Amino acid sequence: MKPSEAHRTLLADRLFADLSNEEQDRLEAEILASEDTAETLRALQATLRLMAERQRPEPPPDVFDGYYDRLAARLEREAAPPRRKDRAGREPSRARRLALRTSAAALLMVVGVGIGWLLFGEQTASDAPVAEQPVATSPREEPAPATPEEPVIQAASLDVRTDRYLNRSKVLLLGLVNLEPGQTDSVALGLPRKQAVARELVDESAALRGDLADADQAVLRDLVEDLEVILLQIANLEANQDLPAIELVQRGVDRRAILLKINLAEMQGSAAAPLSADRPTL
Amino acid sequence: MSYRIDKHPGKHSMELEPQVASPQQYSTPEPPGDPFREFVERYQRTLYALAFDLTGNHHDAEDLSQEVFIKAHRNHRGFRGEAQTSTWLYRIAVNTYLNRQRKKALRFRQLWGDFGDHHASSEAVPKPDVIAEADGIQHHIAQALETLSPKERTAFVLRHYQDLTLADVADAMGVAEGTMKSLLYRATRKLRKALAFYRNDLGLR
Image (cartoon, rainbow over all chains, first blue to last red; front, side, top):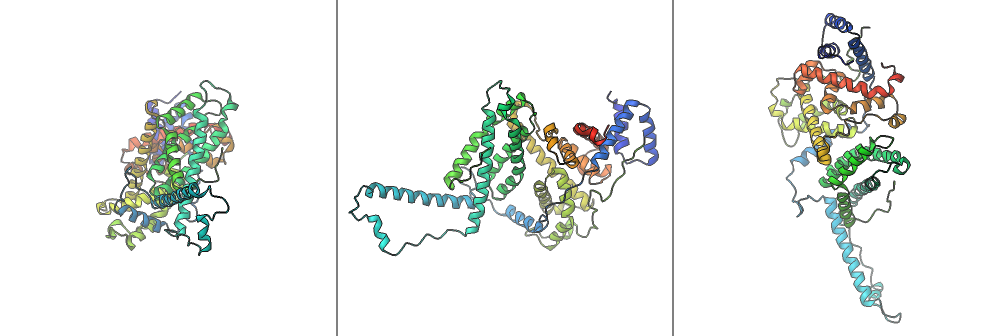
């Protein structure tokens, strides 16, 4: 039986109020007068004893190395004037601008090669293809990279991580949203595997969100946040089939057009950078 | 059976070091100067520990603690010295954390619309398959904390892991003491329910 309102007040006072020993003894005597309330008190005290066993894990060793420097950098970023936004209202990051320039240059080269093939590709071997002439001359210089290499490597790393994350999330969500209504075969559902993947992705999302925020990729960060919500829901599905909750996930995905947003993000990413060779699968 | 919940100063909370830098002792808003650095270095571990207790993971803990320092830096002129610096920082931390969680809840509602305010994290009651993979009691405790609402978690963490008095917790959260006791009571009942799966193993009743 649940304690009455008066007894709940007694219990709350006994457990949490800053009382003298005498006051605690008085309250306890009142509480013990009711067996149900006494039982509740013992149970809650046992719970608090257990929670007191919590040990806060040590932070990673490098958290406080450079903590102030990271904070100062963040302060400066927040104090900086807002960047010019593109026509879509986004603020393209430096990495994205570089990636767009590189892809535009690559596209022009492909178009040029294509035109050359169309114009000169039908010629016989006896002809001296115009394209071969430059071989006799001094080799062309390779275009210098527009920016130092390190930022490109770092940008590619975040892009690759984001691409992997979105691809894995998409595969996971497609596996759920395409379930036939009324399907109850738990083997076909493959829920435990899906939940494990969802938990991995949730663990990854906190760091990814932060890095995307640092790289001013607000749209992608928001998408990762939306995905995190859905992935948490998937991770907490019942081990046996939990059809109402699965339907909730399906509706959430549809309502927010999550899969469309992932596709758009992937298209923008593939337009800006080469496809990653390492395509993760579930 | 009589049992008193004794406070364990130092077991969970970092003892606050003597205040040697208050917000009013530095006056350069942009860029931050040495006094602000001293202020940050003095409180960063305490604030980080609180942020970790609230968020449950290191990445969000650093993010939250830095945001608190940024707000403290912006609002230092509003600090009149009417409270200890630590109390002032706690208030900023609590408000920042609760605001973030409200925004997250709004996102949940936007996702599920008519299907209600569905806090996946607040309903993360450990399932048997999760328990089977759990890494012992610490994992169970962390999972149990995830079942609390943001306000309940804040109240519980401040009271039991930061060792604040009831009055200080109520002050940090901007609520009356009676409301605080109700929050703590609800939180403890939820934790008891969340820990029910392994109650027998852990000797809980």
